Length: 141
Image 1: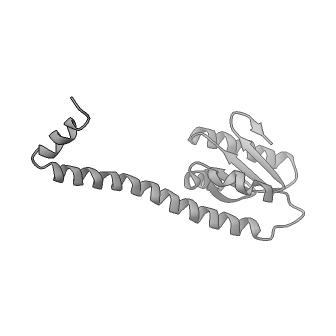
Image 2: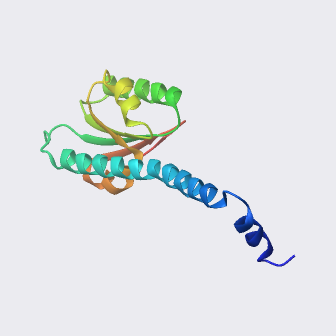
Image 3: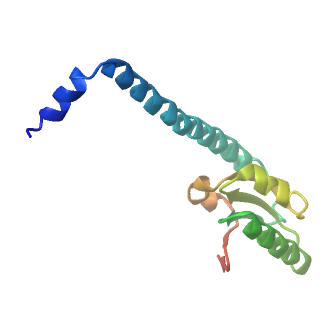
């Protein structure tokens, strides 16, 4: 069978154009999710840049904290940061995670929490902070 054989069969099949159009439309619909995520990332990036440019109290250290994994790890990291806040001088921090809305909901009760952003901005913006932490099963400074 030649390479053109299957395409001839497809072209000869009844309703093949409608099937092809339906297939292309389904591909476009799947890609709209990626477009939506890209637009959200732009919004988060703009908001994060604006927030990190805002003046902070120079006496209070300003931390960037990246938390990866799932909901349980968010809870463990929130406990770690709360305990850290009890043991050291006051600090404020922005959180970078895979799900900023859920993370913001969990971390809002932790002293010093300011904002929650997508984790993809962490590497780009961490230099603007006094200290950057990556909290997983252990902490990377």
